[in-house]
Amino acid sequence: MKILVPVKRVVDYNVKVRVKSDGSGVELANVKMSMNPFDEIAVEEALRLKEAGKATEVIAVSIGPAQASETLRTALAMGADRGILVKTDATVEPLAVAKILKGVVGEEAPGLVILGKQAIDDDCNQTGQMLAALLGW
Image (tube, rainbow, N blue to C red; front, side, top):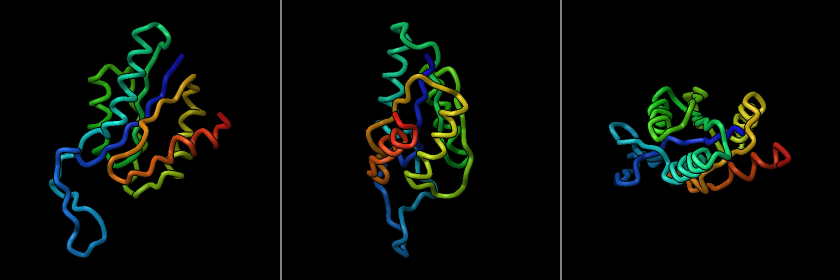
């Protein structure tokens, strides 16, 4: 069984965020980025399942700019077998992420998708439920 684990690139949880001067968002220039901590937990659980012999492959997938490949490298260093980067420079909302992940699930045909419970940058906690609804799981 393949396990697909989406991982998000977010501002590192140890960094004190600064609001842009125009109030339009958070300042991201020269800020340390890392894997969303809840996604890191999801990768660890997928790897535990693989070590227990219940899975054959762990695939990390990230949606974002080219720099998101650093997040995939972190997942690979943790023990994931492959990484998939869906490159986009646009900001993607949870429904768009769920639709993109639905396409990845269609291509990869995993037996299980493990998502972190929420992202620490937008606190949405919506993608997992939307993906399940789109897949009929």
